[in-house]
Length: 609
Image (cartoon, rainbow, N blue to C red; front, side, top):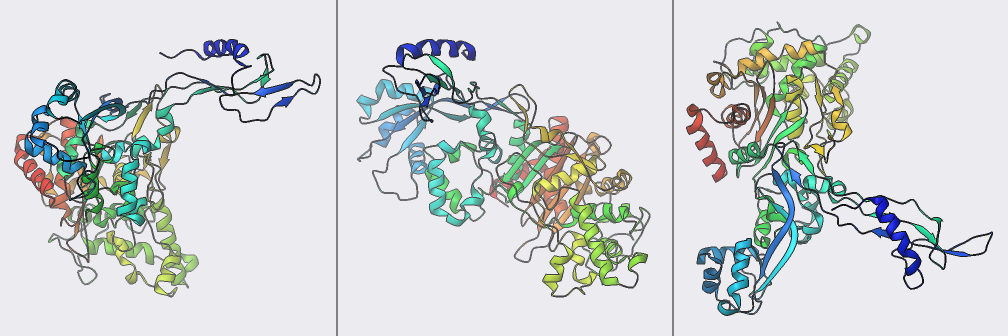
């Protein structure tokens, strides 16, 4: 129960007179002060208002508690063998396989020497059985009870994160196993980002006291007690768990957000792992496997990994080309594969809508060519200067989408991505006389462009909103207040809304018959999806699959970005995951027609391919 600040202050100051002669300052930080008039010396003290600080809880958008500080029961096993594992299993109600697995998970590495200190987490019921029967059946067991952060769900590891104080064993392991990569792997989630607000603060009084304990002013400003505040997340815990089942052990990410608010509904970094793994005292062996795993599951992919976006970036290029008057919605181009290959067999793209529907690479090659090679009258004699000016203008428009800079999500670390500048190409090509042919990969979202998962999802939200966005964020409420002020600030791109509206018919056509993702349509349940597929070329293995989209197309309530490494085509690998998350969010369940499809995706995710 919180005690009012004024009541504490009055009570504590009343006691100071009696205690001054025999007590010492709680935490004095200044030298004694001498009154120039009376010559009396006053002693500075700092007095803690000793109310109990309770760390705030973390709740999802529906107020389900995800993280709270609760009692944790730990069973310390004897360090000197032998240990009767059969008797221990009978005592706890575990079978022999469970006993061996739990002990193996607690060891820091496979084959750790006997006698390594092992602690096992127990339920309250298991702890009661130990209290009753351990001394008779399995001697030398020690039961410890402590307060610790407890997770009610295994999902959301990349979002929830961990308390630094409870993650010290993980930090030591990470520094030993990964050394230079430790910085990239460390992600404290919202626990770290909002640590000060979750923890709260003690109140302090700063009186100056004479020898009799009477106060004579203060030597510093008093501070009030503040209880730890609850965090109300934007995440939907059920949708998060569902999205993690779709991603499973594959490498990649899925980010779903509400384009109307910037609130992140699901945030998956895959491969996924249980959120308690990094702080649990009996998971050292599992942490070692995560640290050593070639797929780097501890890397926070949506925020920290920037990749070429592939054909989904054609949306940005099309909007910029319309703004720069390099094309109109009615502009058509031949599918000239002497310019760049096109993997889709389709009818001639006689308009922007058709170009998006078929994701025609030669079409967008020529769109970007018009952007870079157009020569304003003032530069008619200098095509080199024109190319530099046009690329700089293209980049200026693209940056207004929140690209090439951190969006400011409320996580400890976020990569900015990258958009090339004219100076970058001058240096890379070792000449100012580079031509469009040497940079055409920008037209299909390849080459030097790098976007994070957050930027990809935000890009979809911008198109859904016809040109504006709120910065993506994970916390919608702090205590009784709303989110941080910056997440209520609307950002506008430099592109007119009419140009975004021109993209929608093409994105809707992508999901219809003949479009690149027609198999992922939700028309059977009355949901019109607007989307764009992407297949990212990869010189070191199978191509990466990408998809961005939103639904319903005419009144968007969810925008999704999916990226699956080495998964092949965006239409067959990424799009199905995205539309299932959309359907789950909008309807609450998956239509029977897609149940077999859903199960197949989840099985593939479980097996990591």
